[in-house]
Structure formats: structure tokens, C-alpha cells
Amino acid sequence: MGKRNKIYLILYALGIFVIPVFLRNNYHLMVLNVTALNIVVVIGLNLLIGYAGQISLGHAAFFGLGAYLSGILTTTYGFPVGPTMILAVLITGTVAYVIGIPTLKLEGHYLVMATLGFNIIVYIMMIQLDRVTGGPSGFAGIPPLRIGGFVFNSDRKIYYLFWTISVGVLLLSLNLIRSRVGRAMAALSHNEVAAKCAGIDTEKYKINLFACSAALASLAGSLYAHYITFISPGTFSIFYSLQIVTMVLVGGMGSLWGSVFGAFLLTLLPEFLHGVKDFSVLIHGLVLMGVLVFFPQGLFPGILQAWMRRRESVQAETAGGKGT
Amino acid sequence: MRADTYASNGSILEAQGVTLRFGGLEALNGLSLSLKPHQIVSIIGPNGAGKTTLLNAITGVYVPDSGDIVFRGQSIVGLKPFEIAALGISRTFQQTQLFSNMTVLENVMVGMHPRTRSGFLGGIFHLPGERKAEREIRERAESFLDFFNLVTKADRMPSHIFIAEQRRLEMARAMAGEPAILLLDEPAAGLNIQETETMGDLILKLKGNGQTIVLVEHNMHLVMGISDWLIVLHHGSKIGEGLPEAVQKDSRVVEAYLGR
Image (cartoon, rainbow over all chains, first blue to last red):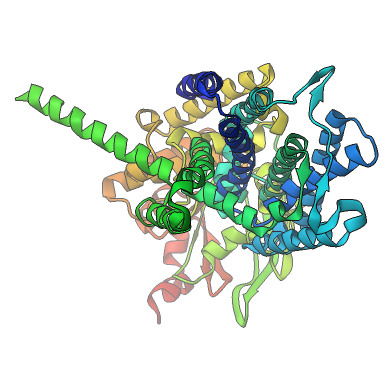
């Protein structure tokens, strides 16, 4: 991670941890808590889209697997919360690995179809296996998160936990993309043949990255289940997958800070649009269209570029002024 | 550099009856050749002779339909491109294939991939070993930039440097993999006379360091000036080989280029 990124990250973390001091409303805290989890999922997906050049339309399923595995194992079978989350992450990662092996060995976008199908299968299973999952009416009574004797039973406590995890995931991901593995991933996403000829096992990296990406979604899902303590299939349908992909695209493929931005924007936007009621969907759609038309590379990189250009032109002007 | 092992006849790479078809077209037709180490061997021939296809077959991008390719006594047919690169064969491309999403320096750092280790965990947690390895990678990549006269462009994006520099950068990236054989696919394409001359000197300098080089090139002036050995392809077959002066006078070669 570069020096500049380190400074941004520290400022970001400071900002994040100061915010709840000014918030009295628990609902606001809850929206931000969900944002923290969305950031985790979006960063995971962006690693896949931006660094493996592959799209997944099934991240809601991985999110859901984490949530349901954690929920069922702790509530029905009395497993301890912490270890179960890790178990869920491992299981989900393995499932993704198994999906990835046949689909990612093929060149082209077969992963989209496989994950789309997988999401639908998982969704149907959540509804049909009602003895285990509670079916369409959902699964309730999930125990809250606890570390030792400390129970995370308020939105405020959860806020600090979730945002620590969310910032941590961002930090580790920023580390990863600046490493040897990260360079290899950036290379293969950009030019697969050249990457192969430079000695990079592109298949292995794509499959591993997909498994990691799914594991992150699973982690977020487990946290979600223990936070809300009630889960139902609707949350994990294909629409959430699409929402997550949209957050990646709006934030900018391959830009991790963009992912943070995209997750914030698209999680908070509907909240701001409550006031306009029926028009909210329309405005939401217009914002998305506007971003894709005017900033096809993503809103965050787009704004950054515009700002850099502006700064450069200002510098050029002052330099020119000095010269004459 | 690792100890070189050669076949009994002293060749570092040998193609034996390599045939490669695209549908009905035989791009390579029972091609056999052998490369001696520490030389510049140029492969010439008219357009469509199968020169680039040969490079693609050697690097594993295409798999031959029949025949064998033996590198240091080991058959490499069927190996994946990344495995062949790790064994010690690097290449450049006719149309430069740089990673335009990273800087000049980072492009070279990627080239060192097969010669470095450190996996996901090291990368994620930036372990002390990883930091040290990363510093070494950076320093070594800088030394490659120095050799290829690109130091001042280290932080530029590849699309913001001249074509001649892009060609050199691709060579630097290939050399960063510490190959036993460097395959150059038309390194002078798009260069002017002066740049071509510089390119020739650079290739000679590499050879001076003991590098084995295979050169596919249309610029006959460059080829005749620096090659130790010439192999002439026509319709996917070898129609002649020898010292540059001898090949130039070969009637079959003249015929292939100019027609009867």
C-alpha cells in the first residue's frame, strides 16, 4: 500500500469512528451498519470483477449461505457464534471453488451464467427446505454476536464492530492489490495471453480469487444474520446480486475506494429518496443511468480524473504565468 | 543464471516434425529445427510463412497437432504457457501486449512473476518477508529498466511512452522472467531507421550477456546485420537455413520472397 493510500485510510477510519458521536437515531446507525456489510461484499466482488475480469451474479447466494449456515447452526444446533462464522466462510469458499473450477477454466464469461443459476438454486432451496430454513416466512431467533462475555446488543456496539471489520477488509484488500499476487491479478484481468506468457497461472488465480470473493460475501452474511437476528429468502434473491454488481460498476471496476463510495451511495440513496415516495425508483434509475452514461469507468475514478485534470490545468496556467 | 543443460547435439531447443493446422490450413507443416545456445537465430519468411505460429507453438499458446518440441531435453508440448515461461522461455509480441493498467515499472515487476514467490497471505498481511521480497523485486525491476534505458519512464503509463520504448519495455518484461531463450516477434516493427539501429545494438548487447535469442523480423537489414544463423520458412516448412550470407544467395529463398 502506498503512502498516500495509508493517509487516506487513516482519515477514512477516523471519520468513520467519529460519525456515531453525532448520531442519536438508531435507524441511522442501522443503515450505516448495513452499509459496512455492503462494503465488504462489494470489495470482494470488485476484486473479482476488477482483478480477475469475471462477473458474478450470485453473490447474494454466497451472502445468503453465510447467513443461513450461521443462523441454522447456532440457533437449531447450538453451535458457538464465532467459530460457526468461520465454518460458514470455509464452506462457502469451498462451494465457490467447486463452481469455479469448471467454469473459470473456460475462456469467456461462463461464470456469469453459473453464478446466476446458483443464486436461483440457493434461493429456491431456502424456500423449499422449510423444515430447516423456515421457508418463505423466514428464520427467526438467531442469537446476537458476542465476543467472550461481551454481547453486541445495540446498534451502536454493532457499528464499531462492523466498521472495524469493513475498514479491515479494505486495508487487507489494498495490501493485496499492491503485492506480487495483486500485480498478477491486474495483469490477467487486462491481458490474459500476455499474463500467461509472463508466467502467471491465470486459471489458478481466477479460481482462488472467486473463492475469496465468495468467502467475503459469506462473512458479511453471517454478520448480517446475527445482527438482524431474523433472515428470510427475499434478502438473498438475485436482486441483491444485481444491486452489488451495480455498486461495483458505479464505484468503478478495479477501484477499491470506488467500491466504498459505490456502496455508500447506493445504500444511502434510497434512504434519502424516502421523501419523494413514488418517484424514488425513477430518481434511483436516473442516477444510475447518469453515472453509466457520463462516467462509464465508474463515478469515483471519473470524478478523480476530472479533479486531476482541473488541477493540472490550474498548474499549467500558473506555470505559464511565471514563464512570461 | 541457472546451469544450462543441452541435448547431445548441443541444441537448447529442438522442434521435431511440428505440424499445426487451423481447419484445413497447415500453418506449420512437419517443421523441424534446432537452436544453438548463446546465438541470435532469426526466422524469416514471407507473410503467412508460419513464423508467429511457430513462436505461439513454442510458448504453448497453440498446441501442435503432431510433432514434438524439446527444450533442454524435456518435451514441452502440452504444457501451459505459464509453465513454459517458468521453465525459461519468454517472448514479446508482434503487436505489443503491455499491461496498460499499470506503470512501466510495474510491467517489469509482473515479468518477474515466475522467479519470485509469495502468495495470497503474504500479500494480504504484508508480512515482513513480503516487504523485503517486494523491495528486492522493485530494485531488480529498476535494474532491468536501466539496461533497457527506460529509467526516466518508470512511473509513466505504457500508453504514454514512444513505440520504441514500448518495444523495449516488452523486452524488459520478458527478460525479467530470466529466460534461457528470448523470443522476439518483430521488435523493429513501427520503428524508424535510427530506432531500429538502437534496437539491433540492444539485441547484440543481450547476446553479449550470453542470452539465446530467436528473432522473427521483416527488416532484412537488421536481420542480416545481427544474426548468427538464419532459418527460412515458407508455407509452414523450412526451406533453408544457414549463415546470413549463404542464405541470401540461396535460390529457393529468393524464389519464396520474389517469386520465380
